[in-house]
Image (tube, rainbow, N blue to C red; front, side, top):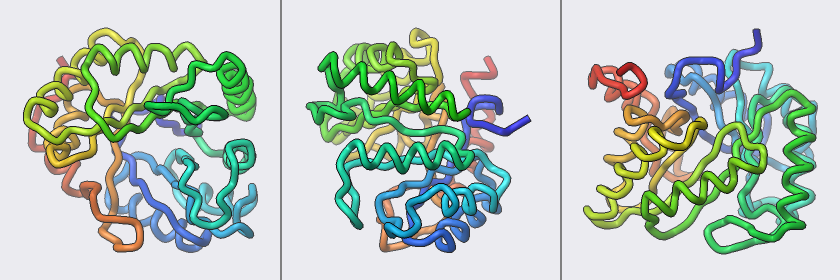
Length: 257
């Protein structure tokens, strides 16, 4: 049976990375695999145009024995493609055997909190999700925002995108105070208790690191980490080794209660 993000024990430790060539992506995929990752998340923003095709992406997928998530946000450093063009590349990734494709919550209609309420854009998202599913891939709908949100706001947000056909829902908020960190923990616990769907709840900001390490023990289904620090793509994510060491030595996970 094909290994996916959804048919293995949660939380799924996912090595996240970018690269300019298939060779760079393969090398980092193998680094993540041998560090103990359970899955991979490849950001396509820096992949050179000549490699943005099914065969190149398949060569990366086939190089490891892990399920692969593909993300392509509005931060293209190579071509500055529009929403429609980026989705064609993500569809190529699904055709190549990608396990899960990231669909932005405001795809086709850039909106506050990365969540569109435009009926035409939502309908287009649903049709895209149907296409991705027809290619054998799952879908995560994601939103990122540079501000804090309450637990109720996050629950409402993710409940809305779940209706669009997502298999997994994802939100990234910001926590810069101890009160916001406490609310982030409350949010994760509320999602685990009430949402009824695999979710990714992550935080950025000065108080984000405790939540990054604790979230997977509190119900986050998929979490991101890196094999090593590399200056080209930033150095904010925890390492795979650190994340797995913390979770292993905690001897506690809400999924086991």
